[in-house]
View 1 (cartoon, rainbow, N blue to C red):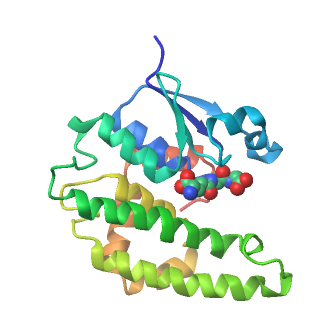
View 2: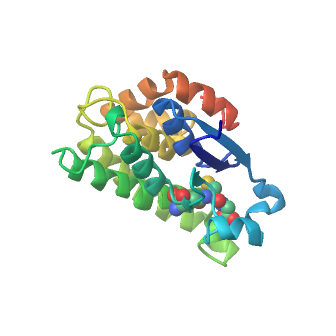
View 3: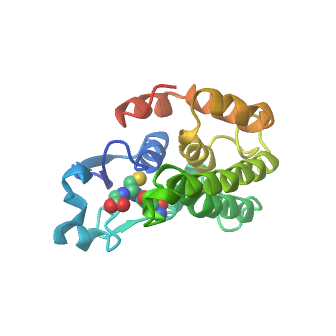
Length: 215
Ligand SMILES: N[C@@H](CCC(=O)N[C@@H](CS)C(=O)NCC(=O)O)C(=O)O
């Protein structure tokens, strides 16, 4: 039997996000490992799957492929409407969901990259720490916005666990040790969501699979 989806992934990447979604949906999928350490994503073969040459990329059963975490989460939810993980177009939760999905995928995801990889944002090595510092200021403002927005207990949305929880945990990957304690001290809802999410089997198993730092 052929699988419903193919997830092109690499370890230590945000493919974790759609991977958790696939597991939560109970979808049938196969994995295709694209080794970014040997630039396997920069080949013409992979470029034909995703013109941006980025992980994650999702393949559908009919051969269509596309990338972008936000788009993949939305598509998976829309293809599995009965799961309720993504509010449908007529659901009153849809605008709120879309707002935060896009905010996490744009501001959230990009800002953690600026914090972690300043060399992608300035050609001046002397400006690396200033770039990280500026990005960190933006990230803490984003954490404040998340804190205000979280409306469930413990999940992002009152309707229950879903893509916003998965993506929030991904964005929180930059938080370790004392930094995490400091950020959570003034953001109790974010703290509650973070720990509840890490209690979930899908997240725990895939966190390890993706070789992310121990919590
Ligand atoms: N906006 C993209 C970002 C994806 C992204 O940054 N992917 C990284 C791994 S987490 C990647 O493929 N990096 C390889 C490269 O930049 O060459 C998304 O949300 O899917």
